Amino acid sequence: MLVAYKRFWQYNWAEQLQYRANTLMYLLYWLVSPIVYMAVWAAVSKTNGSVGGFSANDFLSYYMIALVVNIMCSSIVVHILGPKIEDGTVAAWLLQPVHPVLTYTLMNNITFKTLQIIAVIPIWAVLYALYQPVMHLDLINILAGILAIVLGFIILFLHGCVIAFLAFWTTRIWALFNIYIAVYSLTSGEFVPLELLPATLQRIAWVLPYQLTLYFPTQLILGKISLQAALPQFALQVGWIIFFAFLFRWMWHKGLRHYSSVGA
Image (cartoon, rainbow, N blue to C red; front, side, top):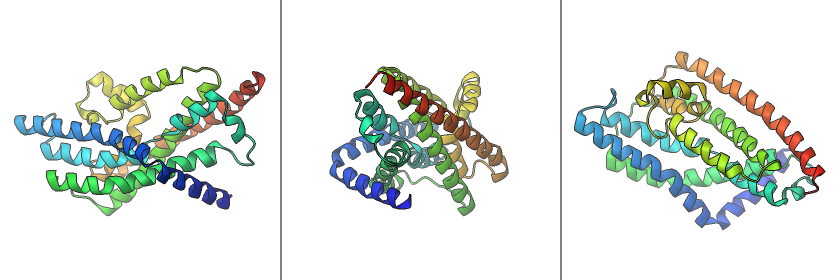
């Protein structure tokens, strides 16, 4: 099985290098929002002294780390798998002796993410030199944050698969995906740290899994969340992974039976 993953890695890495313009466009997509949010909130906090207890440096530190966390946790599985199911080309994948989603699609996500991180490093360095945020990072918190990022990526990958699997039954998954993006932006901490959301929206954000994939790893790396306080969040991440893994398995088998029945 390790040999299969190695081959899929090599294939997908070569594919990512071939479509460099596509990689650049995705990178710009992930860069624009956090940079704009960082500049706006930092300017507002400098004018007012602070916003909700967040100083300009707090906003700069938050968005600088969130920028990297967002890229590392994000998943493009809907863009890869959704069209394959809609146009029927997923049928060729089903002839492979390995699970097409847990091999090809997974490695495609990981190679894409690796290339994005390599490309964002010099951009991050330039932003750091321009804004010079003061961040007191601790190795233990960084390692705990990396674990949170890995678990966050698994959550979003499985969640993305569940959305993509809806293409077995409907061709309107992109409308549902856009709703997901809007909810994610509001409740993950991408738009603003959760403490600054209205109380009702905060309660919704804490119930949904999205803050576990951006806000939680970011604050953990910055040392704003103690390791003891992080344990329930780690448990919640594992719980959501189990939930989405169950949905993944159930919808995959149900979807394939439906897919075969219509002769797509």
